[in-house]
Amino acid sequence: MSRVLDYLLRCVAILFGYAAASLAASAFLHLIVVAHFETGLENQPALTTAPFLFSIPFVALFVAYFAFLPAAVTILISEVLARRDWLFHALGGGIVAAIVLGFLHEAADPGFEVAGAMPMLTVLGSGIVGGFVYWLCVGRGAGAWQASVAPREPTAPGR
Image 1: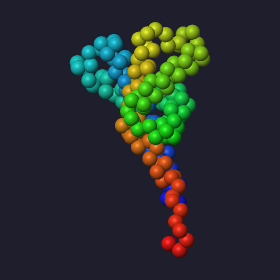
Image 2: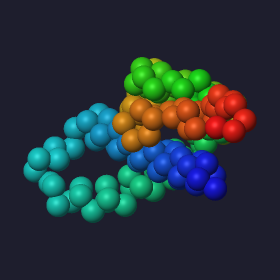
Image 3: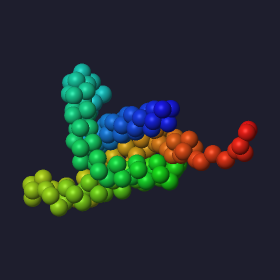
Image 4: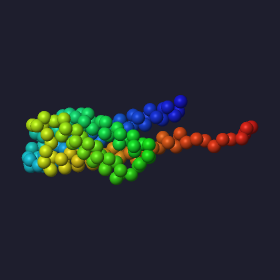
């Protein structure tokens, strides 16, 4: 029963880490867009706080939706191989973002296509940030469940 509870808690932690990574990627996208348009946020903090409190989680829903399958594969690989280094997760987030860009390129309408170097680099950067935040939340313990699965040494009868 303890092993099942460990697996269940790990799955909940992975979902928490994925949600945090999606929020971080969305926040990174927002920061880049605001910096690109140079809106002068230091003069208007009250005008931008409320919309960002709504739009960052809203965009995070789209980030989580589009990146779910490639991120699930990346998370599965990190868990099975017990990869706990930050670089693996950051590069994995960048690869997930590149796969999402490929999906958007194939499935998008001509007016919705993510084209140009700057938008593509922004999406790749948000994937790297998301992967790093996933590592901060959950990735440092990737594959820890394998220690409880390791076979025990047989004991002699009567011990």
